[in-house]
Length: 167
Image 1: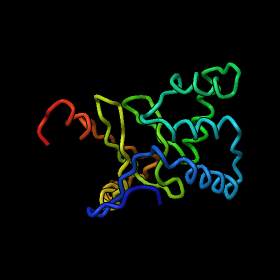
Image 2: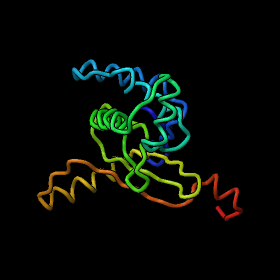
Image 3: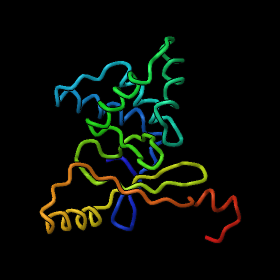
Image 4: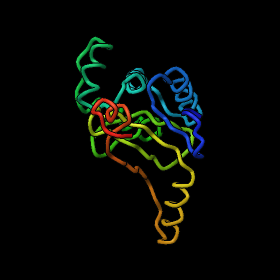
């Protein structure tokens, strides 16, 4: 499990700095699932892991082009991202139309993101209690959830400290 253990009963995940272990896990999962991790898909995933904030397809394109030494089309980037999302390696932050690496690609789960409006950074929180609430409500409604992303937007602690806001 990737993340920082919390005394609150859930994990916090900041993404940046976990690339080697996460890439190894993604390669293992692809092998187990019979999915093909192409060089472009791997590079896109590496780039997202190394980013300090969520990236959109057009943010990714010049980075991937520079690394590969060739031009890419937006559709090529979107196909790679679609694969990564489909495998659970990446989540899409809907409000930014941007992508971040997923903290727990080995299991389906509700993605809960705290997204900073100032620096665009995000933190994924794995909270089984919150997942249980969502699952319970869906069950009560007879609703089958195919995809779940919860986004909470505001200002992160780092940005708050720089703007002099009280904690």
